[in-house]
Image 1 (spheres, rainbow, N blue to C red):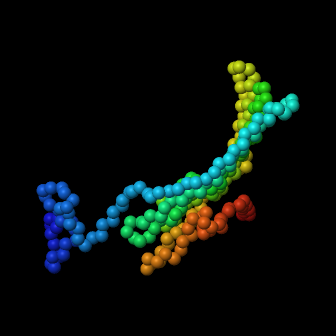
Image 2: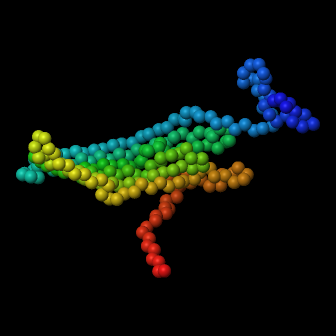
Image 3: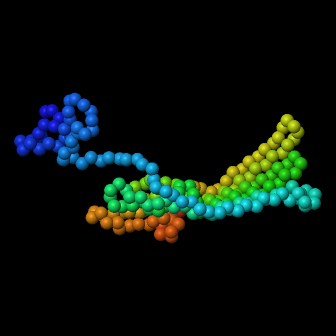
Length: 219
């Protein structure tokens, strides 16, 4: 059977008509079957607004060994939102979620000591809840807030040798992700569940935390 021929006695055709000469898309005629087409395109506009404040000070005016103390602090607040966009021709629209990896609250604090050959530094990093993936069908993945403390030090023995020591994540912080659902539909195509954006207080704040566990066996 050639492409385009009838597939039954009634003359029904359920495959593309193809022509031997020419490759123009206008020569294709699709009947009966549903074609699923994926299209990649740029999103619409997104807006980010915020404020950042910082403070850095070397306390070299203090007497003696205290003159090596210093501090550096900065805090950032930012609010971002992407414009809703229709998903194909379904009549459903994407959620006005924030930009990925753009937490509303973040801060860095560093206490340091630099005197003669010795350097000590405690650095704390805080990052609030942030969106990390909004390309999941029917939902989005977020990352929990994190609070991490690092320590670093060095001592210069001479112009050729320096001893260093570093300790990271002293708070034993872990990265945890959670999922919020939206545009969950029933069989009739009606949206029956929509948690929206976490920042709009519509998303669930309940989490599942697994603590320590012990198992004892007697055989």
